[in-house]
Image (cartoon, rainbow, N blue to C red; front, side):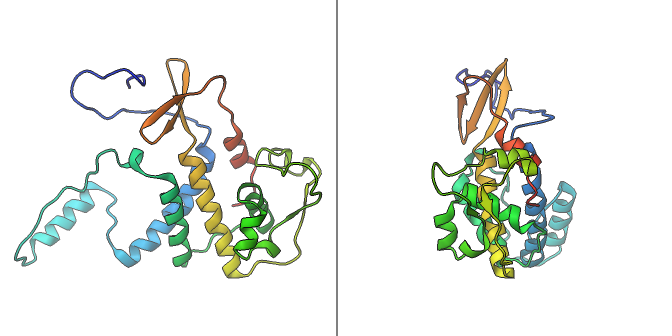
Length: 230
């Protein structure tokens, strides 16, 4: 892997990255469990998912047995697919597709509501009809708590800054809450991809690499590990 800002020599090649842990790893793992289930259910409708080279070869052999007037062969390989994805577009689309599917995700309503209050905000939740099924602040004076609040990292060890709601979300409301959580989680994961090279920490954003001064915060990792949402 070539340090950012230095040109590589030789033909273009794909970097090989080996990692055992990352700041956004736990959250990414939780999201991938849901996304894989979504992909499996979606493929039952569109039937276009290809999981391996062997599966592709088998599909080509089936196609070769058909009578085609003007067959067309094209490559499905995309140059720089993942770095080219736009985080906001991807997150919004996943949220939309989840609502269209019939996938059931087991969640803790209170923890899910607390997460949404912290990352989405009360105003947006009320706008989407979720104000009555998500926690409200116990005290409105001062700055609103964020995802770094001690209540997230400390769990039940500290006094809650929020009032639990007594109303249970309807099935539709719960699905909307999960869709919102997926959208926010994907944004966090895609926008916080960091790596170390030659003793320095970089934050990757699409095709750019930014040097992070000091130590990279483990906020997102701590949030995922201590969260009781899923």
